[in-house]
Amino acid sequence: MTIIVTGGAGFIGSNFIFHLHSAHPEDRIVCIDKLTYAGNLSTLQSVIGAPNFRFCKLDICDRAGVEALFEQERPDIVVNFAAESHVDRSIEDPGVFLRTNIMGVSVLLDACRKYGVSRFHQVSTDEVYGDLPLDRPDLFFTEQTPIHASSPYSASKASADLLVLAYCRTYGLPATISRCSNNYGPYHFPEKLIPLMIVNCLHDRPLPVYGEGLNVRDWLYVEDHCRAIDLIIRRGRVGEVYNVGGHNEMRNIDIVKLICQKLGKPESLITHVADRKGHDLRYAIDPEKIHKELGWLPETKFEDGIQRTIDWYLANRPWWEEIISGEYQNYYETMYGNRERLE
Ligand code: NAD
Ligand code: TYD
Image (cartoon, rainbow, N blue to C red; front, side, top):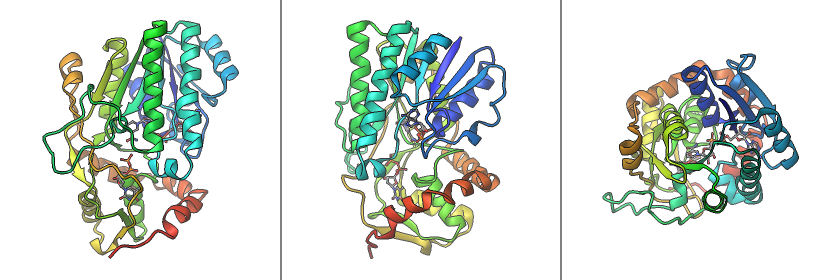
């Protein structure tokens, strides 16, 4: 089979390519990536050169380019990870989120229709459901939870989900959607909570916690997410949405304190700063459907996953030092430079 993986030079897409490469060596993998600030070709160095792997620098919004690639490759399956993915950036500049996360998806959907792929899989997020209150630990997102996005990022992902389901119903496109909770692991871009805190700790820099740090996220090790997507594209039912998460809810402040402890750094580095606008309180996934239908369960416990992640950042300094030495410095200054410090 030929599988097109879009956004494969980013965090989850690259981990998915590594998973496919080792679990299904018989498949051909074609990675499409625009190489935005979040895409990094060096991440893929272990597969570049493999006979069953091709990298193609391409914007998913480039209709002619996408069609030409589909014409050449005639893919069986397309898995779409390509997206603008950071909530804080979407609050500063929503436009590019609408372009890539909605219009880009429509280009891929049209190409999938035209070339008759046997499966299009949209990698979505639990953020399309909005948030849950902090004082109702009995509530979880199920696939029936109404879409209720809070940020421009989650609104763009929700729009794409609606488009995918519409193509499924109107044109009979064989599509599936997964909505996963927060991932962590190797190759995570250091603008996101866990890698940002690891990198700042290693430089003895302030650790910027938004508000009181009481917001809750449901963390899943990236490999568990990749296994779930692999199962869905091969055995999931067409037209269905699958929630993916491992019942691992943690408050931001507790994650940051744990990272300090593991790296032997003082908690005095923690700096409470002005909260994110519209900040979602709590995400929590009910993964019953994917467990019952496809037998998926998370395999990595948070204690092990976070240790592996920290060890990876310690062992792979050149990967993230290269990132933080460039444009990232302007990003950091814009986002955090003038951010109000709370007592
Ligand atoms: P990421 O930002 O690390 O990577 C995104 C990749 O997409 C980059 O390689 C980038 O270059 C590429 N890209 C961006 N715009 C493109 C375009 N127009 N054309 C082609 N390529 C383009 O993101 P990630 O964290 O790996 O997330 C991947 C997907 O998973 C996203 O769709 C995101 O919404 C979803 N998701 C992420 C999480 C998470 O915790 N990170 C959780 C659930 C779902
Ligand atoms: P993030 O990694 O951006 O993922 P998402 O917003 O998609 O869940 O943020 C995770 C949580 O950490 C979120 O509640 C915001 C918070 N956060 C901070 O407190 N400080 C930071 O510097 C960042 C980037 C995030």
